[in-house]
Image (cartoon, rainbow, N blue to C red; front, side):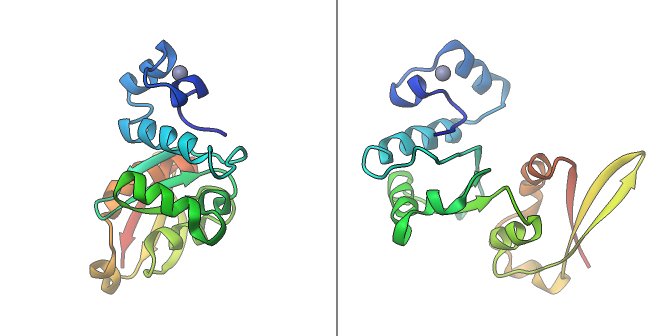
Length: 165
Ligand SMILES: [Zn+2]
């Protein structure tokens, strides 16, 4: 299993110097640590050895769990894994795929809101992905898209911004 913290840290309740410094530098959050440990617990019952978890985001009403791998592994058969995650966190959980079709992943994330298009713009020589959403959909969004921008940027490999039109 791939998690932001190493295996011994995920199984134990202390952090090694390397994991401690990732936490201290902000490269990972306390939520990332908690979810890694929960996944190792769930792994005792459901085989998650091929699961990968990169980072989580507290999006207010729900916790978004990003995976660079196959999202079905973290959802589990009949949603067993995602239900166990939600129960352990006491929160609603959504698994978001970082691989494959970015537009589809974004729509999963923003559901039921659709993405009109993703355009690449250049600003001072830097590529910016402008994710276009309909103005009338703004009130239907369940999460604050501004808070998603840093994470979406990391995953798209370029600065991302949401625009309403
Ligand atoms: Zn560690």
